[in-house]
Structures are given as structure tokens and as C-alpha cells.
Length: 184
Image 1: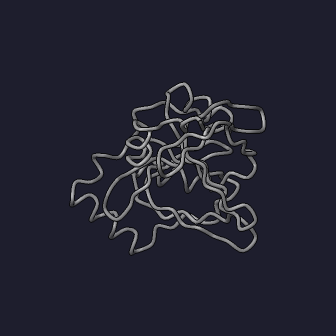
Image 2 (image 1 turned 45 degrees about the vertical axis):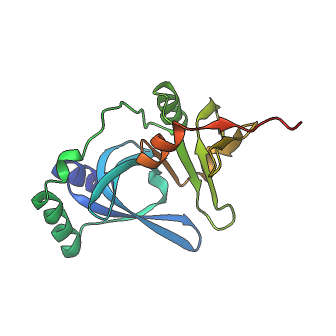
């Protein structure tokens, strides 16, 4: 697996990554491999032909890295359209483990989306990192109206399937966060 990751990272290939997030659920993500450790993979995701946000995925869940003829053609189109110039990261994120990754993201002041996509959990938590623990990450969730919860949501690192950061959605929404008005 590591050799395949290294090959695609060094070549700058657009790849499709399949992650087995639970017994009966496999999800795919598209993008460019920016880095990896023994535990985590950092990719820059693409949506349609747009180079977008960053995602951290557990290596243990990766089932397959695909770069077939269709992917190779998509990769060429991205180059022909000069989209690959946007590939890269300006931040330094320590992806040795979840704790180090969240510490880096917190120090950078970046809000995140933490997903636990297994059927039995299926949670989506978006917001600022309140606290980085040894086994849990604590995120102050915000809702679709930009209201922050009064208390952070605690998530076990072992249940995480994807953490997204520095997306246009997160960054713009985060500028307009607010607290709930006190009841009178």
C-alpha cells in the first residue's frame, strides 16, 4: 500500500481512494495524495473539475487506490485545463496520528468537519476544535444557521473515517458563527 501511495504522490496523479468505513460500507474519495504516515493519509479532494479541500483518512480503512484508464484520462483533463496548479498545501499538518493532526489544525486556527461514516454511527460534526485529547477530539459544532453549541461534541479517534479542513464551505461559514441568544 505504501509503495502505491508513494508512487501516486510523487507522480502527482489524480486517484480514486476506496475506504471501508464499516463492515458493509465502502466509500470513495477523489483527489491528489499530498502525504501519508503509517496511520493517516492526507489528500486534496476534487469535486467535478475543481481542486478543493483537504481530507485526512485513516490508512487502516483504505481498501484500494485506483488509477485506471478512466482515472488517467481524468488526470490528463485536469492537466489540460490547468487545474493541477492549485494542488498543494500551504499549511504544515502533522499526520503521524489523529492527535498530532488535530493539534496542528488547532494551532493553525482551522475549523474542521469530522465524519464517522459507519452505519452504526453516521455522524457529521463541523466546527472549531475546542480540545485535543489523548483518545477524543472535542469540536464545538455549529448548525446550518451558524449557531455554536454551548458544549463541544466529543468524538473517539477510532470512529473517525474522514476529517476535512480548509474547504470553502467551512472557511466562509466560520466567519459568521454566533452563539445562541439567551432565553428570556
